[in-house]
Length: 114
Length: 113
Image 1 (cartoon, rainbow over the protein chains, first blue to last red):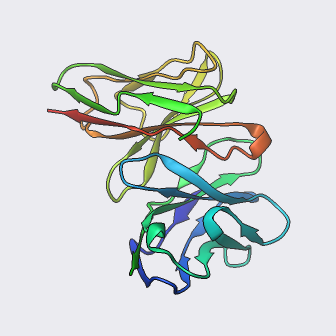
Image 2: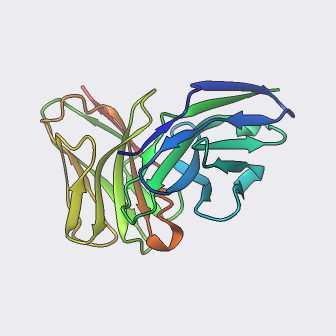
Image 3: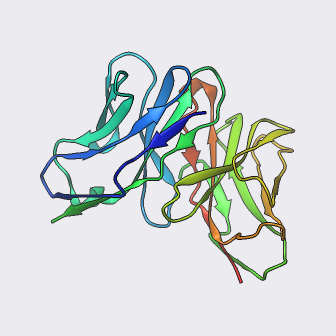
């Protein structure tokens, strides 16, 4: 069985400071990893994904994530937070062995304080 | 939200009534999914379909039914057997070519009283 853990329900950061949203995963084979963002009463929007190759993945809106296989982590980062980054962030994992089911974490609410 | 439409955005029903939520995509994706979102629980998979005329139960399929008669459409019926149907429902689609990153619709908020 595959699983995702987002250990923080909420992360608060001051505008202009760097932000990190944590994610750890468990999967039998090799993982495909994803980050999505959700604004209130909206669907999820894709931010970035790790499939293979460089462990540092760059995505939309200045976000990036680092894949760490030994720690089974895929933390989301941004060098300088904006108030408009305030939203709900979801990490997700899928096994690369062709089975399309994706497992989502419970989400982390990011609050950027002006 | 581009490429996937869900209707209606808000839906109200009386307890004991079946209700069908619409999901249409024009992305030519093979796979489609239905998720339920409740506060603090993330997204839980209800049903998914990899190809037309085929679908599989997800983690919380009881009280729900689906059909996949066309590639573009994957309607979800919430039956009276679903014990706690009030939730935010999200439809998504994906394709093998993009490692099945999922494209989501805007969601339908169902309230049953």
